[in-house]
Amino acid sequence: MTKRILILSVFVVASCGLAYELIAGALASYLLGDSILQFSTIIGSYLFAMGVGAHFSKYVADDDVLSRFVDIELMIGLLGGVSAALLFLSFAWMTTPFRTLLYVMVFLIGLLVGMEVPLVMRALNARDTQFNELVSGVLTFDYLGALAVSLLFPLVLAPHLGLTRTGFLFGMTNVAVGLWTIYAFRHELANVGGRLLRAATVMCILVAGFISSDQLVYWGEHGLFGDEVIYSTTTPYQRLVITRWKDDVRLYINGNLQFSSRDEHRYHEALVHPALQTLPWAKRVLVLGGGDGLALREILRYPHIEHATLVDLDPAMINAFRNRPELTALNKGSFSDKRVTVVNADAAIWLQNNTEMFDLVIVDFPDPSSFALGKLYSVPFYSMVKKHLSEHGLVVVQSTSPFFAPHAYWTVDSTLREVGFSTYPFHLYVPSFGEWGFVMASPHPNYQPPQQYRLPMRYLNAETTREMFVFPPDMPHLQMAPNRLNTQSLVHEFERDWRNVIR
Image (tube, rainbow, N blue to C red):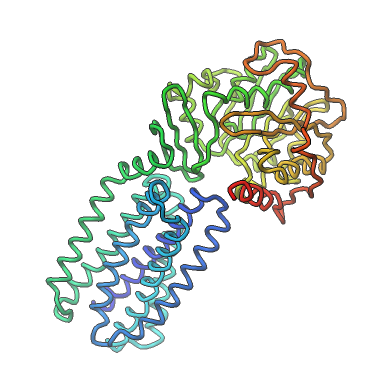
């Protein structure tokens, strides 16, 4: 019976150990971007720490193995359980460098986790378990535990509980293993009463944290964003936060500002109207991204548009901007228009499997801050876009800032030209972002910016439109290599450009 308890504990502690690793990686990706870099460095640090912990486990005396195992479970439960909340609050409120705290916690948790399995194996070995049975049993349950949490984390835990509450849940699970071990081996452990008291104390802390997770996240986001948080959710794809201060409503994705209601009209007028004004015959429009419905709002102002298809990966984004009154007021209820079809899918996969043709394609994705986003700015992606464009249609791509991220901006331009488009770069000033850029693309070199607009505009007129297509000397045209899928040079250029701005 005791052997089964120890073997089963391996399954549980393996699940918890991997969960803390995934939480740290996901949180770092949300807050710092570049998911490949974050997960790679965190996994490497974590595995190194586990190796150090496995080494130190040999210094535990044979007659003290179970007692130290219980102590380690309580320490892991406390440190791992509070890790997500502590890291999130530190990013928002503390002066301690976030990366330093992140890797210190990853190392400490990995160190403790690395001691768990060796101690269990020693406890089993002391009970005359044969070596081949010992190794196969422990490793089997170790890998099964890792498999279980690797499936549950992205499908159930992160989207439904959130990272903070998930951390507290697995912390409680570690403490439960400790309590289970105390009970099962109470006749072999020293200071049972003291360990029970410590376990109960840690469990109470974690339960309180689990119950108050929403409040902790609110405090963190209030410190991070400053304004009142009126909506927030963690989805399988991203962290969405909407804030409000007086008449200013703002959307943040993974901590990055996407729009401010005070000046988003500049951005969305520039994104849509210089193209649609020159296509009075256009009937079908495709929007890739743009899950806030603001680009749709501008498109639907044209009565000759018969149908608009919007493809956005995250249904939570669409639901928020379709149903919340303060958000539908911004997009004028664009998702309720009968001319609109919404598709929740990966844009690249949708383009590959769909055969529809469009007169205008608006590509309104977040900046290429990760490789998952970078593929949506690549040569293969724009090649698929071109296949869905009518002969005399136009494409408009959100292309980051030509002033703050010039290498990234002109990489987008060169990528579009690589697939055979004629390009027409343009830019404008958006107060919330600074100088911002787009690239117009056409299968034929015949685009001319409009000199007037049939519809009333808040920002655009003949003069502002003319100025958008003129680049001053401090925003020169750079010759850049196109963004290919196997190298993702755009992501590296984007990171380098913005790193230089921060410096």
